[in-house]
Image 1: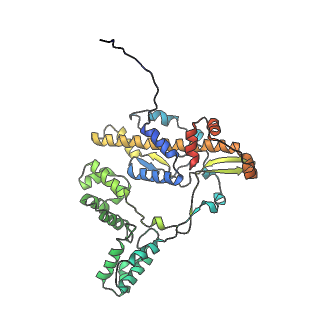
Image 2: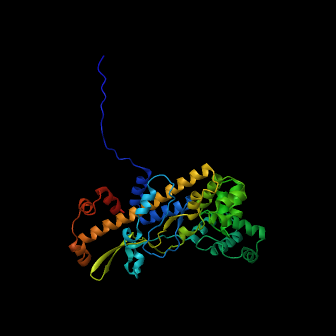
Image 3: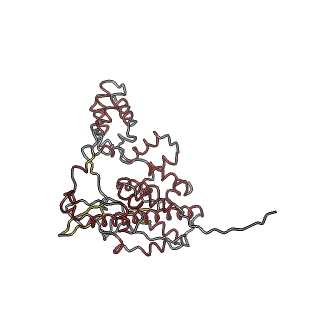
Length: 376
C-alpha cells in the first residue's frame, strides 16, 4: 500500500461578489442606462429614496446606515466625505446649453397621435365612431391622458353615450398600455386588466390607497388591506412597476439630447473636468426604515426584519457603486485632459496617440477599468 501524503497549496482567487459585479456593471453603463437603473431601484426598494432638495449641490448621494447591520457598511459610510472626495459638479456652472451641438441629437419620427390614429384605422369602426375616436385622440396629452371632460365630448359627438364610451374603451386597449385614461387610478387599473393581474387586493390598493403607497406607509396598507407585510411589498412592487405616464416615450418627437456624463470646460486658462449630475437622482436611505431597525420598542416580525435588512444592504451597495462610478469617470477624464491639452486648444492636428495602458498607469487602475469607462 502506498503512502498517503497531504499537500497544502496556498493560492489567491478573486471572488466576484454581487456588490463587485454591480459596480462593474454600472461602470460600463451609459448615462441613460444608469438613470433607468436608478429609477428601477427606487421603485423596487422601499428603503431607497431620492433626495429632492439638498443644500450642497456637490453632494452626489447621502446615506446613513443602521449600525447593527452586517458587513463593513458603517466603515464605508464613515469614510465618505462629500466635501473632499466628490468630484466637482456641473451644477456649479452656468450656460451649459452652449456646449450642446447637433451631434448630440437623437430623433424619433412617430408621435403618440400618429401611433394611436394608426391603430384606430384598423379597428373596423363605423365612420362616425372613427371620427369620434379621432376627437378623443386629439385630446390625449403627451403623458397619454384624456384631458377633456368626456361627457361633454360625448354629447358633441351625436353618438349615444353607450356607443361613445365603447369607442373610448377600445382606445384604452391600444398601445401604449394605459393610454386614454382620465386619471392615474384608471391608467393603472387598465394596465392591471390588460396584464391579467387578477388580484382583488391589488385592485383595492390602486383604488383606495395610492396616497399611502406614495408615502411608502406600508404598515398602514397592511392594516387596511388586512394582509401581511410581505404581501404588501409584493403588491407595491407590482404597482410601482406600472407606467404612470404611458405616453412619455412619444413625448419628445422632434429631438432628444444624448446627455454626457462629464464636461470639460475652459475656465480662464485652465480646463476643468466636471461631472454632470443634472437630472441624476440623488439617493439616501429612508429614515423611516432606519428608525424601524433602531427602535427596539417597536415589534417587527423576523421575516419583515430580514426583508428590510436585505433591502438596506442592496440600497447601500447601489449608492456605493454609483459613487465609485462617478469618481472613476472623473479621474480617467482628468488624466485624458492632461495629456490632450494641446488638442483642446488647437484641434485635431494636435491630437496625441494614446493607449489604455498609459491612462491606467496615470490613474493607478487596471486597463480593463479604463476600457469600460471609455467604451461608452
